[in-house]
Image (tube, rainbow, N blue to C red; front, side, top):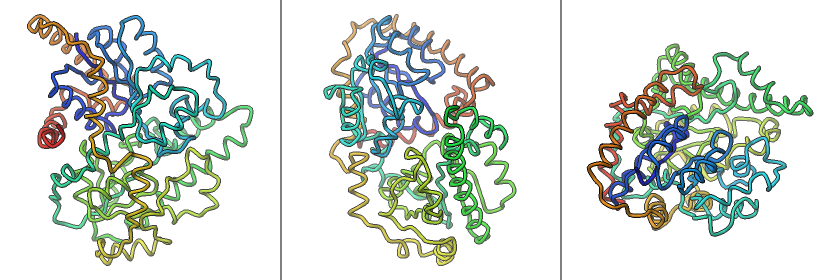
Length: 443
């Protein structure tokens, strides 16, 4: 009934990107839908797509391979995590965290059934081939869709509407203490215990404790910086997996702190006078959108950082300014001369960006993805009226389930599905307006 079904893993992280891809499909006369990962099996059965784009292939997505054979569609993998070009992170994403150190290729031979995997970089491609999980002709280097917004003709169309000083905080807390699934510190500890390798309990717990320490120290530094600048507004943009409810509760106690979950991150970036990160690819978003950015990673002692697992160590950030102390950060903010007081190694930033995201590049990722998929889509005979009526009916049924998912307590990441709620007209209209303003610059 439709050409392409796009499955979304985390709406806060991916919705804008996938809406842009969907718009490209629409402009090129291909019919597509975006669906929550909780509902993809039902959507496949009802929509009967020719192609399905999946964000990952572990855990709940493994059944996609049997569905493909049963309903005769092609599978495309568009990884929702880029891995920063690091082998351990990439392998962990592809085979699951629990299998990253010792996986049996016989258990993943069905990966060869994937038509194409769209990867961020040549480095990612190399790790995919070296892993033995994929054949070289399955892998297409496109760059990430998020890096499409770094093109100058796109980034220049995003305006700064904030006339006041605002310091952005781009956090990427992923430990159980900050996660969306937990109501309390104790709940997080219980999860940590259950997650650990029972055969190496003490070692596993120690690694998790170091990670918790790393994130707690990072957060305490942020609180100190905010406290020392009571006349400055701080805008905290949480990682999609962070506990928004807990953050909002905290912000009520801190007068100069606001929480941002704008569905379009690039407008938020443009509206900041300075962005502070610990370990985040927001470094590159900020750089290409011409917003000053600093890393706070050097505020954490090496004793803590060196004891982190490889998959949890901070991303490289020595190509931007790394203050050595909290007082250095406070001084930068008090001077309010962000453009001139922050050093950036432009050559190194561009090198890291190209190595990990294939950017700068000539072509948009969304266009390259479209070109690859469209070659495999069969042009269907025109049965416009009957096909449209059937799709409208299916849309109605799927939307009812999406509404239910948005308010259901059975989904742990309930607030993520709220973004896809058909009644969420504000975000829907905002995204459509934003994409309509840039689409002609892309195709």
